[in-house]
Length: 71
Picture 1: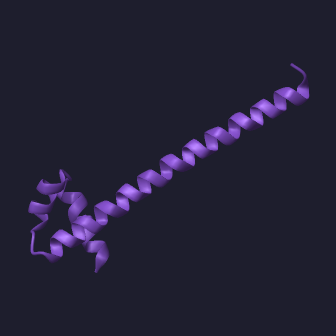
Picture 2: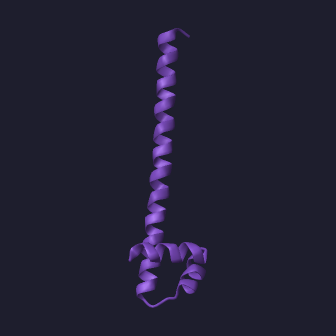
Picture 3: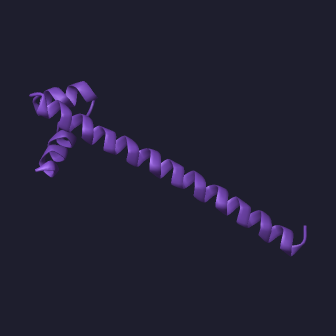
């Protein structure tokens, strides 16, 4: 494989890795945003932080931290 081909393949691999990382980060951010929406929605419906944590299988600390950020 000559230098030009090697550089082309390395660049292609780098782009593919970058896309995969970007997709992974985007999915993670989407899950976090949905989690925040669910916590806020359940809180508005009168659920306690303890109930929300149990329903969403989250730690109480996560729920309280999210609720404190919204105000």
